[in-house]
Image (cartoon, rainbow, N blue to C red):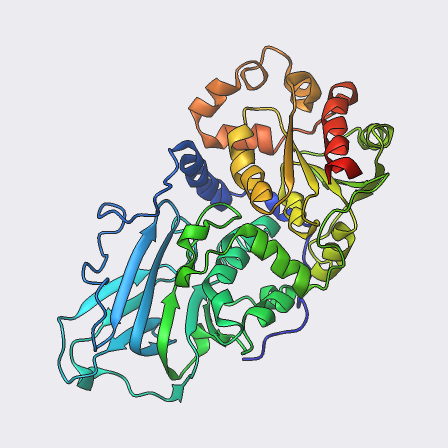
Length: 443
């Protein structure tokens, strides 16, 4: 299969795919449960979370080894070393023993998409074979390691493209310097085309379409599934091979991949600030006022309306020219990854007690990238929900009660039905702090 070089069908604006469909609501319910639960910082695997774990996986043996584990709330993965054989049409990965008969047969089921809660992704069967004679014969032999993963799921949403696939794929494959084979189930040619520069930089080989592959492929090392550490970021201590990758490394990798000219936000007398314009819900309705407020704070300000069908390299180049970014919580803020190190990101958090989710999705990742994160929380009188529903409506009067009622109402109103009218007088202090951070004496 050839990796396509262009997007093959119309793609929407970056924030157009954020509509709250039934399937997405179900997934976002689970995501909400994830960020409301105490964070798992250990990276440890518990028997309750992943009962199929191989208890002997820490011990290398001549017949190879299978190491399977679970990362907290997100991913199940298996690392398979030895005589590994992949049958794509059967979605099976088999470890074949070196001797005729070996340890007892074991089997694991792995969903190769990084969020185990996402439905519609076929599982890959990982097997430690007992009898060598029963193994399928190789038809293609690869001299490089392999990474098996799935597309689909929530891809097509710009933020999920990065958080769910590009960041975990970078972590899984960067140590190989391009000498790694990607084997993809539920392949999306348009997706590989859109992010071709990144995919090609991580692997020098055409991706294998597992669902249509009739070969039995033999490799010495295969990672099954992508391990997601946290939302849109990396935990250095969990990176494979002792490499301690960081989100700042990922941002630097993207700047290099797209040949972006600015690695760091140099102190400028008049730094440049971009305001991200959304096409629909969670729009800034007084955009002109916000731009004037940024200019009054000392910035050279501009508005950007990124489209999903716009070439990533073009968006990256535009964003890299700025020193600061302002945007309401949403997929457009993903483009902060193209800002130069030391830049400022101001996330405007919509009304409705969404701060914890906003920090998990963007606040922590932005700081991990080496950027300065700032937050502006919208008050009730800055939300169009007030004029839409009135001050006595529970959605306006008691967001905590709405959260207690379940994620459906949170998503429907706070994410799907409000726009914001920023109080520029109140916002001025945040803009002043951002400008102060970027002054030459602070650079």
